[in-house]
Image 1 (cartoon, rainbow, N blue to C red):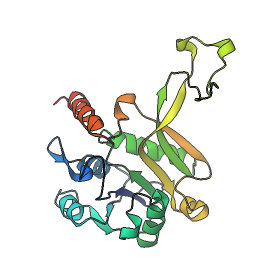
Image 2: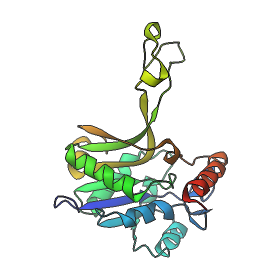
Image 3: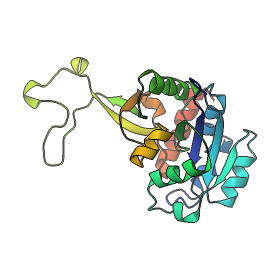
Image 4: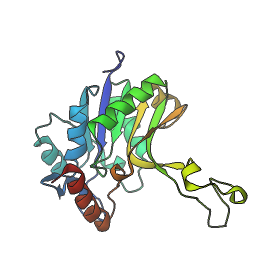
Length: 224
C-alpha cells in the first residue's frame, strides 16, 4: 500500500508459448522463470498481493508451490490466445480483484528487482501519473527504413557525449491505476510516466538465444 492506495501485482502467464515451449515455468537458475519476478514483487514494501493470471493447470500448480504466498487467478481460455490483446486480460482482472494501483510484471524479464518496482511505484505517485512504463536509454541515432532520422538532425549531428539519446520501452513491467483502466479501457492512458532501468536489466526472453544470453547475464549480475 502507498498513500492509502491498495497495490496489487499481476503476472500474466500463458501456457502455450510457441518459441520456447513451457517458457514461463521452464527452469531458470534452479527456479521456474516466473519465480524471479514474483520473488521481487514479494519483497516490495508497497505490493499488497501478487496474482498469477493463467489458464494453464501446470502453471497454476508450479507457481502455487513456490512458497511465495501467490494468489492463482484463473484466466478464461478465450483470454489466453496468441491474438488476445493484453489489455483485455487486465480489464477482466479488474472485475475480479479490488485494487487502486496495478503493477503488471512480465516473467520474461527475470532481472527486474524489488528496488525497480518500489521506485517506479513512488515515481507514479510523486508525479501523479495515470500510468507508467519502464524503458532503457540508448544513445544511438535512429532512422526509418525510408531514410528519415527519428531522434536527431543530421545537419547538426551531436557528439555522443552531448546527445541525450532516446528511451525505448523494455517491457519489464508497467504500472497503471484502476481509474486509467476504467477510463481508457487500456493499461496505458492519460498522463504516462517513464521509469528508466539499466540496460543490463532490460533483457526480454523471447527466443532460445535470448534464454541463453539471459542465463549468462543473470549469473554475472547475481555473482553466481
